[in-house]
Image (cartoon, rainbow, N blue to C red; front, side, top):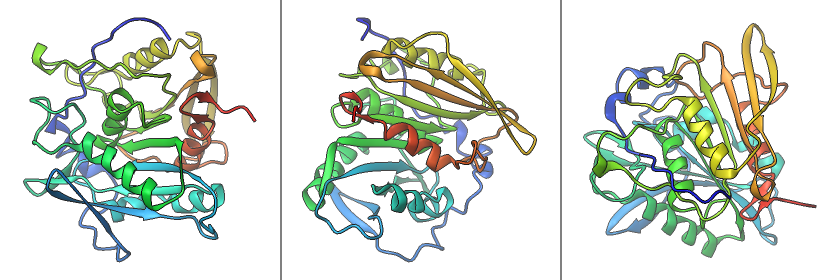
Length: 303
């Protein structure tokens, strides 16, 4: 891993909380979910989450854990239905958890930064996820070397934050329409210095602040950050996918430290959504799982 310090801001801007949220494509009032909701108290605050255990699991062997974070204003139950990863959990045999963001003026959110002025509230979401993983592992047989964080929009930002600040817990991360934001002041800068290589899969549409705009970092700069950090090849393997007229270009940066890679799927004309495209026979959830599941906290899993 290269020896350098790169400062990246993971502040959450509410500029994505209105117009863009109307594009999210799922109802946020949680009215469609009537299943069990679990709770945990962290820093005196009751937090909620949904856990899905794969069908047929007998509880005798350790399973990987995938945390999937909803976007700003989202609800875990509807997001669970919207992303449709339970069937993937059944076939691939992993525990799937949807944490619930805390309320802020009537909208749920994630504080995707270290505690301080970068966040929009004093809720400690990084500490919440740390405590949640501890609770889940005490109540379930979880392979703690194979814990993955993925998310959509503000949830994607949370995945980046966990990769940066809780890398001792996270083996790989994924972001769908999620941002790493530009620094707006010296106070808001935070060091993104994971303790090990962090594989990343990023899926993003070209109409969704793809080139940056003064608030959001461009997708290229985010990819370059993780390519440099992981010390992968700088020349990607490029492939084109035609999904019923939608053009998708994949970029795979391979041979990083501990044999990790960085992958980016560029959706031409894609908006701010959890994508419903067909990636050569895979939906978004399956694509993400197939990528992250190749790794544990030590890098590429060698059979």
